[in-house]
Length: 553
Image (cartoon, rainbow, N blue to C red):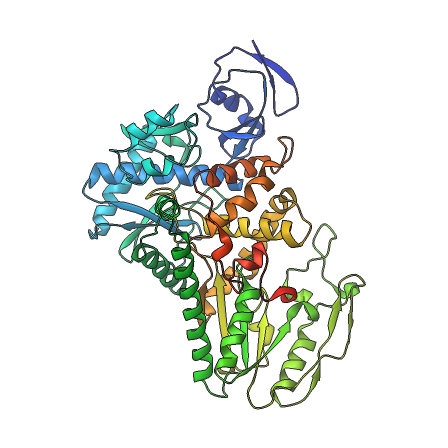
């Protein structure tokens, strides 16, 4: 008999060979939402895993970020198999997410009508009602490579080449279609009964329920400007021959990593110069440039590089930090738990900020405050701004796109820029790399390098960061005049060297251990790249160090 430490803390005995699913069914009443994944000694595990040794067990339901990933991964698998059943000639490639929807491109450009899509959805719902099982298998790398080569995803086999020979590979079967998916699946399709399909541009949206309410699927809200940026990134990744991790690994093994770095950096410089040209083309009309984006988008480096290009166009960019306009600590808003809410718009002294904007645009010289985070008070240390004839205020902060921030400035006198790291890189046709994961790696490495925060702390606070983005940044992105994608196709390979030791340092008893193991398993699939060729003005340098902008970051 095995001694299992259960979620309640009690030690219970179970026969060797008991399925984790059996325990999940026993402890389901302690969860409000359906359990979709197990945790065995801190590691995320399929519910179909067999227990073979004494261990500590816990469970994940769909109300968590990891549970949401399991649900969406399984739903995507059902969609792919249903599509192959109803329209076997259609080739699907998973691209990116729009809120709670996954966008899938039709690679071979076959146009599907709403009736075609209805047939696919009907097939999916039949599999759900039949509780179609997802078969779970574990095998050697050698066997998996032979098995996956003729299957649906051409990049899966070379992707596995970087793994150690002794690595055990988990793969899945649904209606006799076998694939490698990055992460656990539900045991059968009855778990994924909430979804819808929609035609979108020349592809398909697989719409999922929201993590916070799995009772329904909310109507899709389009983001047309963001979709264009995603499409451009995907097209560019294919055009340079580097759309997947497998192709990036090929660049590295063939000794052409410097080439891919140079191409990526040249593209950034060209695009930033184009944005500066756009601002300059407005003549003296635009006096305020507002830059916003989610955490670890590279806002600071982007701002500095944009300022350089603006100077090339004979403009005089003048940076203003929104941090200096925080309200005095005694006046700061608080969260329900009593802690200060520094993320909300009301944490800023909007009256003072708009007064300064109005006066500067009127040609006055304005004394700019400096916020003392230790004392929670504003100080004045002699900084003054006068715009003059060619001056343009450049403001960077999470609320930059919110019109309430700069209400006194007419809209036609502002250029709003939204930036984010929208990676076009994926593992293969079905396994994408979420943009939030790339930003998390950026933040984790930067926190370790420059902020004396270990990876554990970064991972533990990430959900709060993401919640703030969902509330204060993403809803305003479509109001941007310009969008800039800060991702660099090669950066995943650079972060490997920095992130792996940080993640390995997290111990199994930590609440961050599950996430650390997930990120490590991703990094295992990419080869490390030599970052010596990364220029000192690169956005990458904001996170790994040795940036030319130094103390400004």
